[in-house]
Image (cartoon, rainbow, N blue to C red; front, side, top):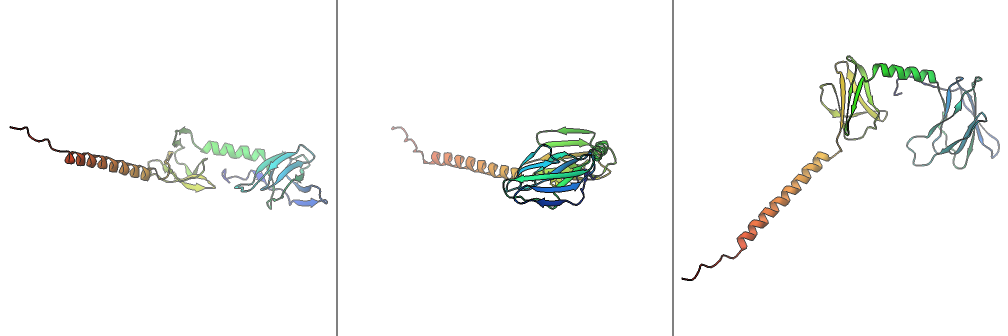
Amino acid sequence: MLLGARVYDPPAPITRTRGGRGPVTLTTTCTPGSRAYLSALTFNGSATMNGGRPVAFAGKLPAVRPPLRSIGVVPASGKVRVELRHTGWLDLPEQPIGCLVPGRLERAVQQSSATGATQIQVGGHSVIARIPAGSTGTAILAIARIKGWRCSAGDGPARPAAAYLGLIEVPLDGTADSVSRGFRPPGLLKGGAVGAAVLAGLAATALWYRRTRRGQEPVAAPPAA
């Protein structure tokens, strides 16, 4: 979805079988030469594809995203048979297997590179990217969208970052040749203002105290005639 291209080949319908208390078996077919991945949310155990090397899974709650791991390369026959040996609760999504087609991924990356940023400068709290003139669509920054990021396209005003699939996006209308993002911890200005007010209050209190002390000091008596 981030690349704007279909790089996974949805497999044929998946059949699930289980013999007694033995492993759960998933069978399906995928594009030969693609790489099969298994998505499992709270699966604890191992997944073995076509009798190959077992791949360990250690899912646990709370889980934000299901663990996604490669379990093997699809053979020329296209057949995929996965044995799941679990030690705890087996919780699988409706579509637990996906097959990544390398050629599609390479073409998508090449397309993204050809139309993406030509130069990137990364600072401690900022990112500036040069983009081809006339670029339209959406610029994506591979950083989680959290409060504090502000973005601008070209000479446009900086605005709070918008979210796209959990990352940061900046809309492009074809007029900008750069994209800028800056980060400032949320509440920094408000915290700075409060801190300055507290310091000012302390300074005023100290000045008042000094003046009060001077006013209370005894006045020396004039010398005797």
